[in-house]
Image 1: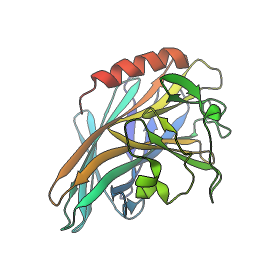
Image 2 (image 1 turned 60 degrees about the vertical axis):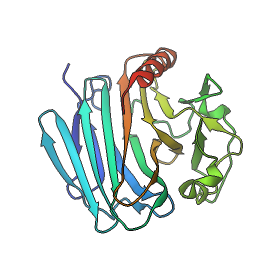
Image 3 (image 1 turned 90 degrees about the vertical axis):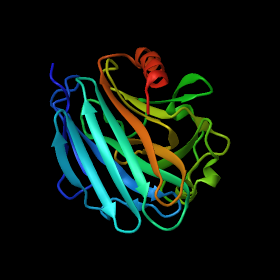
Image 4 (image 1 turned 30 degrees about the vertical axis):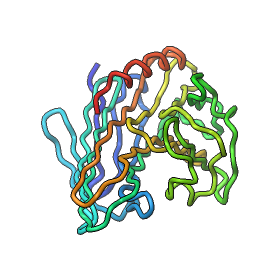
Length: 252
């Protein structure tokens, strides 16, 4: 089997994932990033117009917002995974108290796995694999979306980007990943980020997000994270054990 192909959208923060062996004839996509920078005032999709290029077996996206930030995102693929290394530099003259990259993974074009009702969505809570529908939910102005704090991270109230949406359940901290099982229950897609600041899920587009968290960044400082996407012929429990081992060993 060949490696998954990454195709960036010219002058756009969006991308497509093609030729996925575990999901033939299904199209995946996303935005890496959908928003990036200071958590209190990050730059959204459409604001930046990155350059996409290839370097051997890697695909690279570079974006610049003058006098604010620069970022480089490097995609490396296998036949089951896409590794996404994000590096962002604060080029402003102001410190960022909290920095982020809002990473969107979308199966909206993947008929075998998209799940608008969340009946096949999974997360990790209190050390256990948990159906997303069993996690407390708080409805905000946009009832199809939900944001979650992650284990070891700040409360949602302390993340300006998250607090703005007003739809995060209190006292819920999840593991830094989200997954969707296929309709036939034999395959899984998933996203995990290290280090992760929060999770985001949107029923309208069946998209799952695990945001990079770079902590505080002063002028001239650079943050780095690893996001991994999976497309595997495994059941959810088998994948969960695999993911835990892989992310524990993964270097950022």
